[in-house]
Structure formats: C-alpha cells, structure tokens
Amino acid sequence: KVIAHQANRRIFEGTAEKIEKRYPETGLKATEILEKFVITIGNHGNNSTASQGPGLIEILNGPNALKGGDHILMTGYGSGFSWAFNHYII
Image: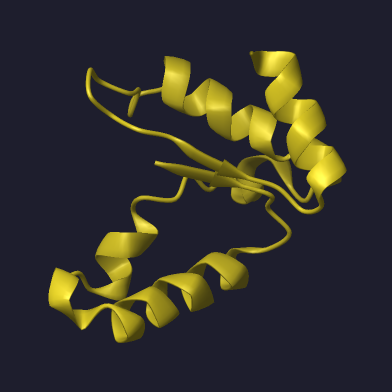
C-alpha cells in the first residue's frame, strides 16, 4: 500500500496513469494501481501535514488492514514532513 501526502485525488489518478504508461510490462491498469493507494481525502479533506496519519490508521485497523507480507510505502511533501511523521511512528 502507498500512503502519501494527500492534497487531492487527481494527483493519485494522474500518478496511476503515468505508472501504467511508463511500466507496461507490469500489465497493471491505472485502476489497479490506484487501488494500491490509501486515499482518505474524501473522509478527512486536505489536512496538510497530517494526511498520512488517517491512511496509516486505516491500513492498521480498517476493513482493508494489512496482512503478513504486505509492504507500506510512505511519502510526504518535503523532507521535514516525512522525517517528522516517520520518526514519530517508529
């Protein structure tokens, strides 16, 4: 799963389309790639630097919780945001 800074859904849709075009050998369509993103902006809005937290809570406790062997990619806007968030969790 990918948990990223969430300003708007269009960013994720555009990213999924670019990944599909750049890596056709995967056979994944943009819709399948989009399913790998944890998107909570519809529920929580753009909460700036706190946008990774709701996504993390969702994949730890939600209906689509992680299973053994799953991986998480976390990314934020700006190194300070990413470092502070990931440092706090670890």
